[in-house]
Image (cartoon, rainbow, N blue to C red; front, side):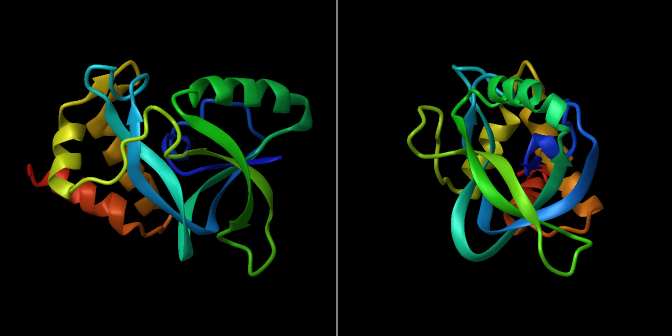
Length: 173
C-alpha cells in the first residue's frame, strides 16, 4: 500500500515505510484552507495547514510512502490519530516522478468543507497573518509553511499557492 503525503508528511512522515518516492496525483490542488487546532495551532488560535481540492488539469506533488503489509494496520492507526483534526482517508491514483506512465493505487488524507476545522479560502494577507500568529504542539505554523515550501522545491515541484504564502511570510507581510 502507498500513502501519498502532500503536507507535513512530505518532510516528517514519522511512520514505518519501506520506500519513499517523489510523486503526484492529478486532478487535485493543495490549499491552506484547513484549520489546525491540534498540531500547528490551538482552538483559540488555529493554524492553517493544507488540504486538497479537486481541480481538473491540476497536479499536486508530494511524497509517496510504500507501507509493508505487516505494518499497514499500525501505520493507518497512527495516521488516523495524527490526521484526526478533520481529515478522512480517500483512495487516489499515485504517479511517480521517475516513471513515464502507470502508477499505483494509494491512500491520501483530505479535509473537506464538512469538517468543523475547515476554514476555506481567505485573502493572502489574512492567511499570512494567521500563520504568523499560530503555534501548537507540533510547532509554529510558520515552520510548517517553510518546511513544506523547501521540501517541494527540493523535489523540483512547483506549487504557486504554497510558494506565494512562503514568500509573503519571508518578506514580513
